[in-house]
Length: 513
Image 1 (cartoon, rainbow, N blue to C red):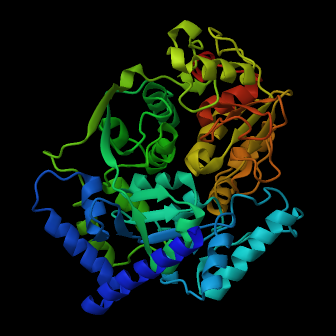
Image 2: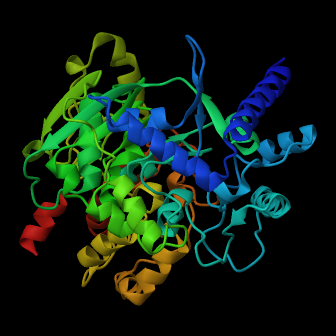
Image 3: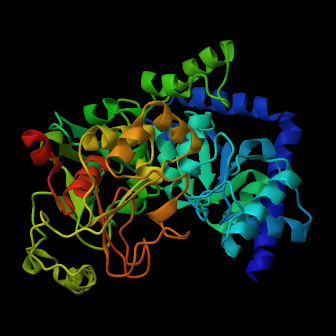
């Protein structure tokens, strides 16, 4: 039955899209212009949010009392969620509708050592080979292992200029929300939806509610973007954003680098939101300029003029608004088994009596899994592994923070540290800037690009019962390996922990250095 429904929907999508193209006689470049003209006409309507402007400009067809058929500008694919989708196309004799709008890279299940050699793991090798075959067959740009731009899809995409303001972007990965840092509507999709986008360049989606999270004020020294988003999630809970698309606003986000904004938007999904975005500005435009897929010359100037109109109107109304004071944010660390279970690093795990009655069983289950007790202090907790990397914190800015901290120090003997760059470009920058030399002198070893221990789909797994401080985005049971116990933190905190061999407040160490 699901196959028949899928087949009918695919035919419906294609019929709708081809009908529109025939009527308007649109090429892709003309379609993009059409989208922005539609967006520009929306500017005359008062009170629109940034999300509304982008969404409305991409609606192909609205279904009464149902979802919208949404046009997709960019489709990112990798080796894990694409094979089944391509297989579905093959069974039905369908082509990829717009292969030039799809970009691929292997990242989830690739080794992070010896990438120049044949992949030993049979499943990983099959997935990577299948991705290569499908991209060659359908004419899709692929950045494979050992190529200049291979890496974690949400790191290499922005580095290539694949990600641009005002776009709709999807990928078969929940942390596609990362790209919202550029003023995009970006979200993860399932494997069947990957197939739909390949076949039609559209997706059927219900329009989410809109939330704005404002963070204003002065951050304390050594408080990072990762601390900001962990703080927000600890206040919102892991389900506080369910049903919403979040816009991050306030001087704290305006003052962040693009890398920091990507970290924040990356973890929007961890509070249950469909995604998150930040209005583009001069930092965004400077980041995008000169990239491989970015507009060039006069086309870039014209694009910037359009992108400069991507902001929320002053009189726009959100379904929910939340305000936080930046001065209350400190370095954060999680203690439980979802990203909402976080505290200031100098704080204590909540007492059971402070937990809502209905949530007490799951809280206690989490404590049992982690081997912690309610009321425990986080400082001094034992640590066996440190993982620095992932689409959350595997960028050059993150590695610079780590190198600055560990320079002249030595990694603790009881800690195994994995430093995994988010892409080949990050790896090259780290070598050129001497970061790799600093890490090796401190007893660290940088591996090769990939998702690595973020999800432990590859060989990089934390052993059962061991404690890891991780710069990734999730601390679910078994996320980093069966029985692994994960504490999420910033790159600075992770670096301090790797040196101390236990949970420490990095500010204290910096003050006494």
